[in-house]
Length: 79
Figure: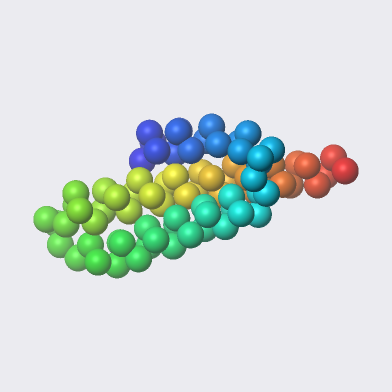
């Protein structure tokens, strides 16, 4: 979780090339996909094929969402 969130935290400069609303949307979609994956993780033997990918996708999506929401908020307050 930490590794994927750390890597996703460096996506801030993407806002100069891609509209931040699409990056925020992609973070939301990542968290939705992770939640759907978690719904099918109903046993302990489902860790590597359900829980682990859900944690990686969800934490990366949350970090992308947080990073670009902060970027939009700060840029709107500086205008």
